[in-house]
Image (cartoon, rainbow, N blue to C red):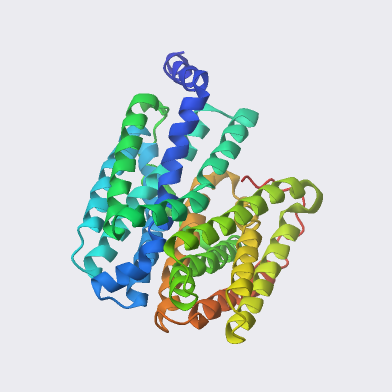
Length: 416
């Protein structure tokens, strides 16, 4: 009875103000992807002002993604031990500090290190927002919360480059990071006022950190899980290769302004969101496996066509069409890869989710600098990385996941 008197009022309070709670959780989830994309229109000018080569500047994307992946392995278990409010509030303070360090960075080394810290601290909002929903709502209500949350943070790739392009009209790339400091402050105040503690002390797990790490080895040895994790990682790296390379390619090679780049990227992000929503509608008819195979095949096709357009000097139009279609195809990939990977591990869903997150962002972080190897004035490295990762995704899907117990699963429900 003591548990009920402490937990039920929290759930009642949270669910009595669903819009306010959803907005706060959406902002916590939004901060991570927003921080990755908002400064990408300024990557070329950043390289010039710091006197750094393109590959070094693209490390700021790579290390941010690595931090976003690694941070998930820590933030989730910490919130199971100490509750939801304290870790997420602390992470917002540290995020603001990291963003200020980015803005004040005197050189590329400091900036890269600060971006890694920024990624680690941003990951807490993503993980803890999902945990809060699991605390206060289950069944249909929980699914409804999660689907709305996906739509909110799915707006980040659309809004961030457009916002970043406009910020660059009035300030330098350093000003973009000060905007992130302000955003973190606003989210901190909103979280402090709206978000209740949804995990009471009697439901916390002091041994969660030790138990979580103990399950990782078994997950990695599961061929199906490992295969779908790599598919998610390689597929996401394909998209991030575009995110890291496109500012240089579109602005330096094709003469596009930072503002117009933001528009192009926004169109691609809309295509990605449309793909993810179409995926949700088609799941009942085709199943996760078939849709995932189709998405991987489409990404490989558009990667090959992109290489043809670049090598054939076909101009801006064909290149941007291929990139938009690539992003639309990617919209089908994450939800299905995650659903299939976690299908056999419902009892350790948190650990499985953390490892999938590490693969998703960690692999992307490792390959991102490759798009800048050829310099700032060529599109060939970006096209080659996208095509190579498309091949790696397809080969992994065809080999590591073929013949697994849920290869022919047609009823997996993929959220988002």
